[in-house]
Length: 146
Image 1 (cartoon, rainbow, N blue to C red):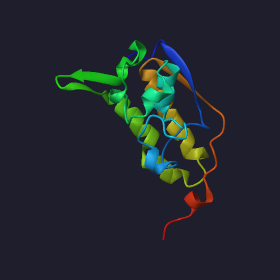
Image 2 (cartoon, rainbow, N blue to C red):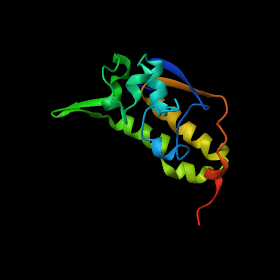
Image 3 (cartoon, one colour):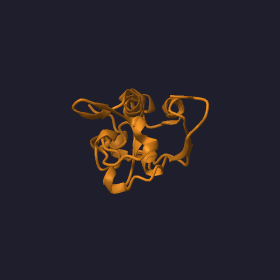
């Protein structure tokens, strides 16, 4: 993977970006029932993958990945598996540590998560830009557990 020449550019709109614990039961899907997507779901949509094909957990489960997205999977003797690079992106997108840092105000750790995602996509020759504002968390989600 090369960092020198981007092969694809896309935008992550924070308003539809599904990450961390914002939607805890649905963070392990490329797109959820509300239309929110993880960074890989948004990337795959920008590559032309239909939304209906993204109701799966990981890139290896997406049928007919476009050629420019094949870096997300590795072929093995038993079939496709998520590449180590895809796994790192899923970890950066969903890692609970960032959600703990966010604690209702995702500005500081949100920047760190975005920086890490940009860095990982850049290693694959993909440029990502973040736009928009994150949705506010509901009052029930802000309450601490006792």
